[in-house]
Length: 74
Image 1 (tube, rainbow, N blue to C red):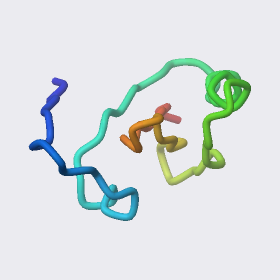
Image 2 (image 1 turned 180 degrees about the horizontal axis):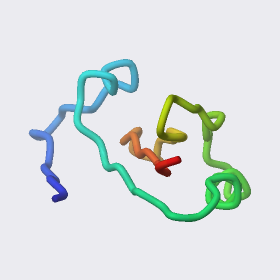
Image 3 (image 1 turned 30 degrees about the vertical axis):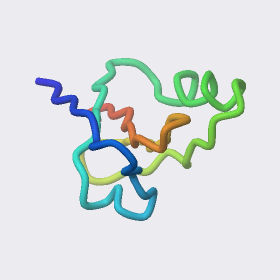
């Protein structure tokens, strides 16, 4: 499920608030590093791949400061 909404006029999202906001998660089957490199090559600020028990993921922000997550089950 994907939820999209538009902010009221004259209101902007604050990057620091992204930990409290919803964001798009893309679940992948393959390696994350090639998918991580693609936006980096276009000048997007992309975080490092992070690993937890059964998952690895990376966060990045689009030009409107919306957070996205690429995620892969381990």
